[in-house]
Image (cartoon, rainbow over all chains, first blue to last red; front, side, top):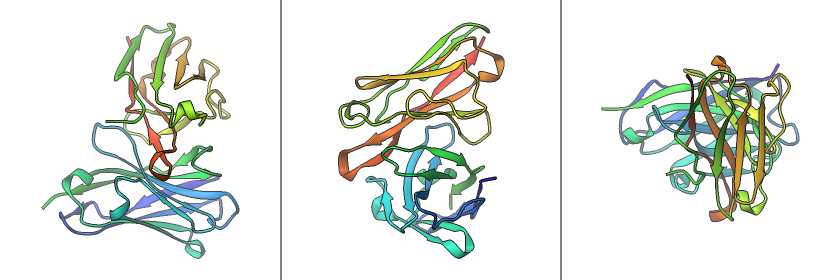
Amino acid sequence: QVTLKESGPVLVKPTETLTLTCTVSGFSLSSTRMGVSWIRQPPGKALEWLAHIYWNDQQSYSPSLKSRLAISKDTSKSRVVLTITNVDPLDSGTYYCARMEGNPAWDWFDPWGQGTLVTVSS
Amino acid sequence: QSVLTQPPSVSGAPGQRVTISCTGSNSNIGAGYDVHWFQQLPRTAPKLLLYDNSNRPSGVPDRFSGSRSGTSASLVISGLQAEDEADYYCQTYDSRLGGHVVFGGGTKVTVL
């Protein structure tokens, strides 16, 4: 059974760096075609794709947030980490990680983690 | 503002048919990229509903169907049921700015 679980701080102060971890099970992050994306959802708003990491460590980022994002993975620990620098209250919301087998240009997210809620406030 | 435009809300009585549109442009849906649909029940994570425009994953009822034409895609729920009350999102790929994943703004389906 494939599962993903997000973890991270509940509260972060403005200008700080947010670090989120996605722990996966049921598949290997180094398996060909396997990848993981981070997607967020502000309260009451739509989904927004943030970043994707491929099995071969290639990365892809949202153009609007690229300068503030970094995605990496630790295959031995089955973890994918996303960092967001210089956070702002607008970064508040639920952060999801989701698996994709293939390429974001053609394939789909399945399954998703349960999400982790982050609030940015002083 | 989302790259893909969806109606904010649609509603219908049980048993009725509702359609959710997803309008894009020549850099995404119109470029031939497939559209995927997700269902988000209240207070839960999104779940894959349809992939590659019209394909249902195992376990998704056949009252959910989809299509793509030109720069738009549609999700149809035939025989609306109370448990279908949820938010629905379309998703595809946009070739601008080096290429990236895009989502629609979401549609709230209300069962009257």
